[in-house]
Length: 91
Ligand SMILES: [Zn+2]
Image 1 (cartoon, rainbow, N blue to C red):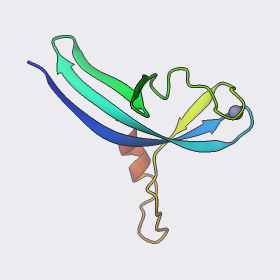
Image 2 (cartoon, rainbow, N blue to C red):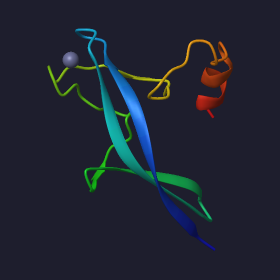
Image 3 (cartoon, helix red, strand yellow):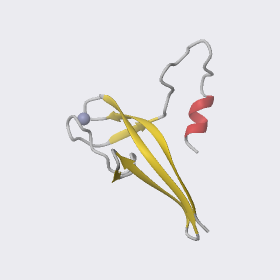
Image 4 (cartoon, rainbow, N blue to C red):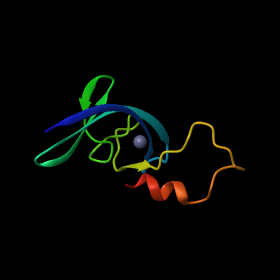
């Protein structure tokens, strides 16, 4: 039995070589089969590597690149909790 879905996912990346950040929008296809859960990352419609597995910086082609916890586009400093969101993003 297999189920798949494609969901957009935005990641903010940090180049640890020069400290720059950028955002990458992936379409993530997840499916489940007898081997377990699988995720495929698509970037501009093309299969890409997972953002945490060997992505190079688009500016300087450097590594390592760190994937930062996703934050909403419009942060509201008054309404956001402190650390609760980071805790849920790692799951
Ligand atoms: Zn870089």
